Length: 457
Image 1 (cartoon, rainbow, N blue to C red):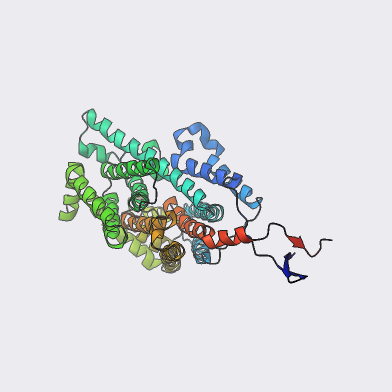
Image 2: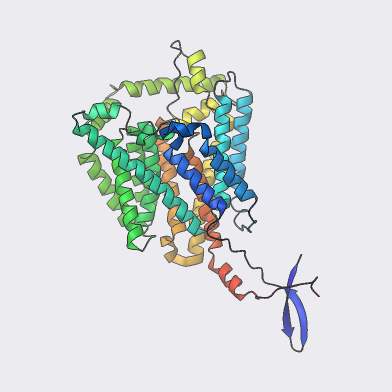
């Protein structure tokens, strides 16, 4: 029903539409609390640390409850949905391509379980983009993600120190697979843990050196995060993580507005590589460069097999998550299942041309949306907008994507949560920027306090 407010022209009263007043959403809601709880479960992997919880599937329960809380909560007008709809379409297209690929898979294997995992990640993206609609909520969510990764980083550093303290050599510590933060799945492998650290290092760098936080305590927290994330990358034993961090620092030198901060980060990184990176890791880099590394040779073999799978099934691939099964049953005499050890090879072999093209389109839409967010911030707040949280987060998400793509060249992490979480954060940052528009606040403050309906007596 239309809403009208009285206006006065001379002695005659007329009726005119009231100024639209945006609905202000409360800071806390059950849906927001549920999203934070799911994130906590996802990063701590509680069911794997405490097997007694495994049967309860608390992560899935938290996700379902969060979805229900959102669906039954009052709808709030979201003026940013039109501008961010491209990512929604991109993810829907990628999911559809994976569904068709799963239906046409030559061997079932773990195809449908991986597809269900993709659906869960897509639902996480959906909830992030619909629930994180204000800068305050985005800040709290990012703080929780950084805090949980900080826990894993300190565990990694402490575990490395303890193992070295009892006489285990650098090479033995590294080849044991890294700390893994005491969990399995996403962070139980040194390389997977290293990728997680690279992503949050990029976000922390942008927030810290962008000087988005003026208070001492938040800046001290970001400084501690930056230091521990960098040390965890050096000590976890992942060469891909070191390369990803190097790529983040290099792009930061070229793209970030705060050149002094980027230069300082680059100098710190070079110092750590020269003086802190374990000698065993340096030796592994030299062996890979000289062609004497068996691990690097095995990766080249898996990449070749992945290209062969793509050649045999070029349109829709062998099915999501189906590389290990196909490798063990049709492309190897050993019968041992191995992953592709490259996100690019994984996408080509498992999703084919259709899935890979939709994924590339999704990444380009992500970069474009972050650029639009920065442009919008500058148009609303001028040059001072470069210190706003939304602007710095958009820069950090671009850097996180760079680190993900570089480290992901050596890991099969297409269906891991990292990409989908910062896809959602990109949309959330843009939406929060629109909702923080000072012009909306002005319109809200000048709108009449009393509203009249035509149906009123």
